[in-house]
Amino acid sequence: MEEVKRSIKRLKNKKAAGLDRIRNEMLKSGAHYLTPSLTKLFTFILSKGTYPDSWSTGLISPIFKLGVNLILQIIEAFVSLVA
Image 1 (cartoon, rainbow, N blue to C red):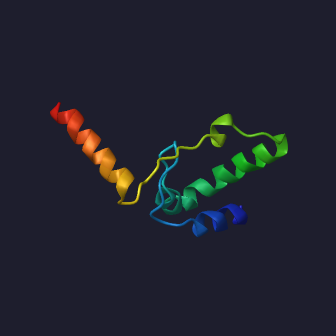
Image 2: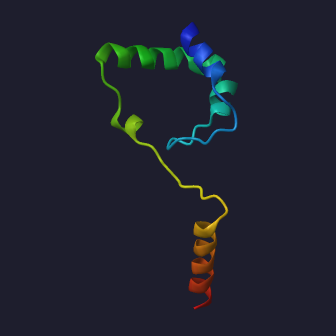
């Protein structure tokens, strides 16, 4: 249980939530209540040697730097609105 508690405490703030929409700040603020349940869950998963398929899914969103690609996208979006 201490390992889970330490892991939650080490999570960085202001990071994007996953597909479950759970932010690190939510886990940190509820750590006292969540730690026992999370410990049971992780112990069960480790004992079975498998985990839910949804845990392998991620969401990747490109963030373009201000440059030619972004300017072209803005122009294309504007043209499609005007046309």
